[in-house]
Length: 119
Image (cartoon, rainbow, N blue to C red; front, side):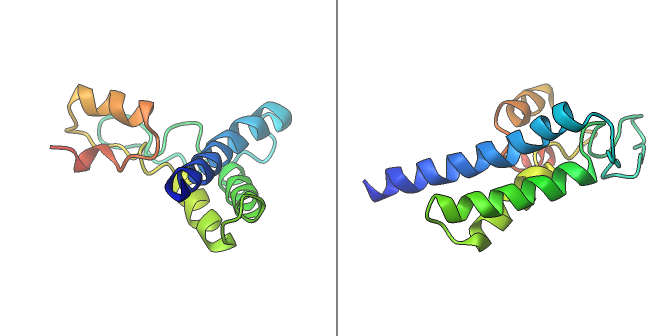
C-alpha cells in the first residue's frame, strides 16, 4: 500500500511538472518566453531542447512542483528534483543517431532518459 501511495505522489508531481509550462504558455502567451537553449541549432538542423522549452516554463515548473511536493507529503527537495528533471526535458534531449522507436518512447513517457541512452 505504501508503494502505491508513493507512485501516486510521484505521478502527481510529474503531472504538475509537465503541465505547469503548458498552462503558463496558454495564460501568458509569448510574454517572457526566453528559449532555454538560446535558440541553439544542432548539426541536424533541430533545436537542442525544441521550440517549446523556455526559461519561464522551467522556473514555474520547478516552483510549482516544489510547492506541490509539500502538499502531497513529500519533501520540497523531492519536488525540486522532479521539477528540474521533468522541466529541463531530459527525455527531449536530441540524439542525432537515435532510432525511430526511441523517439516515440521518449514522447510517450517524458520521464525516460534521453534517447541516446537507448541501444
